[in-house]
Length: 203
Ligand SMILES: Nc1ncnc2c1ncn2[C@@H]1O[C@H](COP(=O)(O)OP(=O)(O)OP(=O)(O)O)[C@@H](O)[C@H]1O
Ligand SMILES: [Mg+2]
Image (tube, protein in one colour):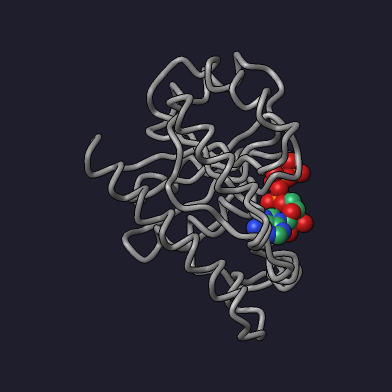
């Protein structure tokens, strides 16, 4: 079974949105459980509002379910303590750290990557503004220069994510067939592909 944990050093950077969409991709490949480890229960509420193609369970009662699972995705609250990140990394196969491409995020991002102290993490740049803004690409280049493990794919910023959360569906299922929603889904599909490749190479 593959276990990935989605976490980060601050709130509102797309952790839960990432956990939901990656679970949907992994569910295409095997039985997938999303464990909601945030006391706010964002993912549980999302799943209860609509219809997601995988099961979401509370961190207090998922244990028996993992017997039958191929993929486990764990959503967490924001973790300001670097020690927490290290511990979380030790407890999973891949720690995913969503990161937004704003200038103030870079310094703390580099700090947390030092704190994780292991190889099984990857940064995911999300909420990327559309071109001609190049903040996403610039951050990706800076992180690569600093040898920070990072997903090649970035997730674009689109209002459809908020609508998807409201309706309890995925970003391409809100009823709007606009290029941004479909593109955002495609972004997560590519991230999912990178995760499967990572797992294939590291299991
Ligand atoms: N790619 C995106 N484009 C636009 N909005 C996004 C994107 N990803 C997430 N959002 C929005 O940003 C807000 C925060 O997202 P989310 O709840 O996933 O973050 P979080 O890191 O889990 O937050 P918290 O720390 O509160 O748990 C939500 O309103 C969500 O709809
Ligand atoms: Mg969240």
